[in-house]
Image (cartoon, helix red, strand yellow):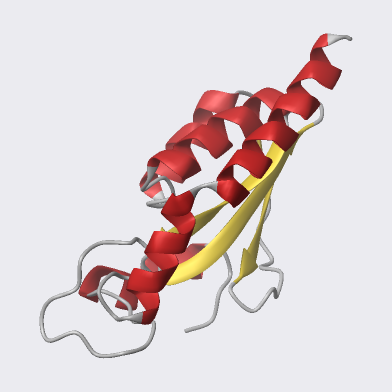
Length: 144
């Protein structure tokens, strides 16, 4: 088994482990109960009402999916929450630049996302959800 096959198998195993973990189920129950934010999973203030809610930070942000792949450089493209493609695309020389873009876009907020993002960088393709401000969203070509 070569390195890329090993990485693929590990990715599949990690996805399976996430699917059988109790953590996503507990978080989903708390989201439906209105106790935590559906985007960043931070605790919402009292009183809690039923339904998936956003915290004040996430309510002011745009949820954008960044997907990337390494092919003669790191190609990055963006989609909105309703899967519409944004016009801007970027190409970077190193993975460190992609990490910095994800950090500035408030993309990695829990251990599951951090592990998945690191594994995606090792596999040289993947994606992550970003929480962008109005200015960042407009730079990507989004319309407010």
